[in-house]
Image (cartoon, rainbow, N blue to C red):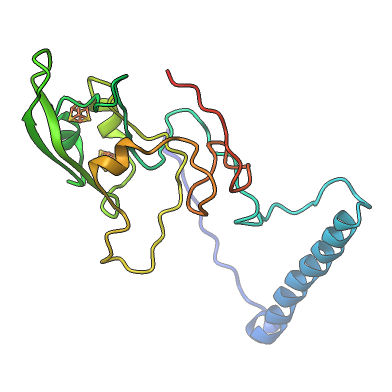
Length: 200
Ligand code: SF4
Ligand code: SF4
């Protein structure tokens, strides 16, 4: 059955038409919440109450927990035991990428058991939409988005700060600490704490 939506027009009374009255009412509601929250936070600070009572996240001191299923952090490239890239330069990720931000240059591998390796592997993160299709497409589990790095803001969009090359991606570990742009996997941890990530 077709659902009917009835839109009722509200007739404004005289007070409604004088917008100043409604504006004062709005400001008083905001003011009430401000005062209530202020005293709640003061009571919480002095340990007079258990919960802070408001849901504002005090970023960057506090960070929300990001689900660890199918993470969408900055990419990293996986290594074999000998330190060489797991990537076999099949171009699947580059082809799957809807934003054309992966650039790979394949070369013949010196290892006779492997056909190709990426001589260049670059990701332009400014173009990335964090869809994760590159991770899904990879047949070698050579690219992951579990670096734990979630903050990419830069002052200059024309700088190459968010343009990552193979060496950077290969040496990126999922629990780099110390740098404000790198923090743990569980983002409720404070910057600088390291979180152990189990390799699959
Ligand atoms: S996450 Fe999506 S947009 Fe970003 S590099 Fe991978 S495929 Fe491209
Ligand atoms: S990262 Fe995976 S999908 Fe991309 S080129 Fe390397 S092996 Fe292929």
